[in-house]
Image 1 (cartoon, rainbow, N blue to C red):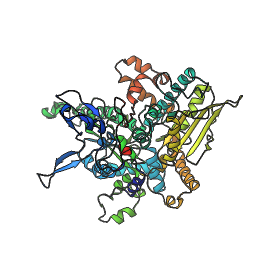
Image 2: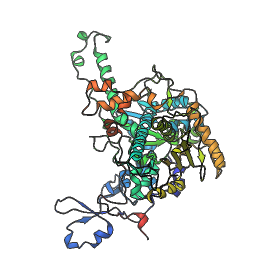
Image 3: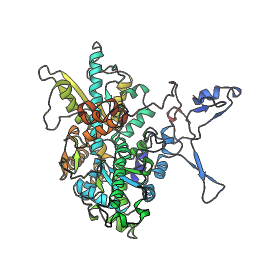
Image 4: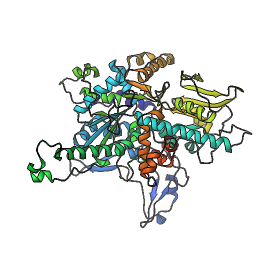
Length: 594
């Protein structure tokens, strides 16, 4: 199937540009000794006699051609692209190979267990395009996926809640450390290096377009400002390959036992064939047996899933998220456009998501990471949104601002919408908390969407030009308008008429956010009150070596948020690709002149 016209347009502003050769640093390895990285210029300066073996990394892997056994086909993986500060091939070609609908169909047919997680932005796009509620759109998509061989379809609200709670804990910790250890002579106390290594302003790290740009392009001094936390997609991926997998194995064993138990078997165990009665139980599945697909609003999520650091611990090469599809690709798959189910692509495209049967909520297809029912007692609605406003890009700014005001300054903000102040443009907005008595600004949060605004933020951070008017927290998104304006969402007819009209775009995005938050079947529940959050934190704690069963059962949510066990499970590391492990500059495409 065709990839998408959105990718072709996105390439016009892509930071992964083509180059004439791979500019990844040269590697010297002699007589089995440990390898040492050289920049290109350094390697050329070393005399040949002193370098027994100098070679480029084997970035381009090869496989045998089926058509010609003597020929070899060169391949470049997404992980290779992330490890390189240049580029060897077109990014879209790589994405087509490893993150496409065809790959989904192939892997689904051969995997023991296929799980699909649908993000809030993706389900909102599906709902908007079909004119139905997000819940009904998700039910219809789940039925289409079930027919394609998918076992479970999940929403991502629990993973999003974990990410929000850890993001708030990270900011509060940095703010307290900075405020107690900084000097106010030349800049605000909050804009100093915290004693634990964290720095303010805290820059969010849940947008893969921004984090990849930060690692490849911006000054390395900016990297400590990024939140060292997994994005929600990867939190969901780790939960699927651990928590859900264990629940699935227990369910399989229970079904096997029930089928052979004399209490439930249709025939008594004694008269059943002896071989069948004594047959061993089902072999538990491992993380490598699970094919996890994430449906997201943009194509950068595909590169995020391919990061080498986002693998299941102890499982070499097993990704937490195997394939990422956009909302547009998911719609095409469930409507059958990739296979021509009607014999006519035009006929398939004329049909809509609303023509599919809705998967019942009491089925085992629509579920959560514990394989529980979306109608379970204690769950107010099948779908959950963590914040009332500004939810279109994850809700980090909204949640962290409200909770920090309460925890740091004992100020409870009203439930009404927060008042943002537009700065240079519609994608640069500011939110402040002032002391009711002195009118002194206590917190200053900024939303910077789009690379034009990102440049302004990182310029101030990299040059240490942070004054009293500088933000403490910056929510950064690569897409102008945020995630609800992602290039992988289903195109809206109104987008064609928007052009440069920011007011029209804002009205459209506000309408999408209203669908996300206020539709039937969706409830707004604070992250700490999400019915799965406490069980998930206790599950995470139970996986730590020092935890005992009594400790886990008695642990409170407050004691587990931001804990060592939670950070070990949810931690992410961002590293600059402009320097090597010794701090030496690495030559990249931006430094080359042809």
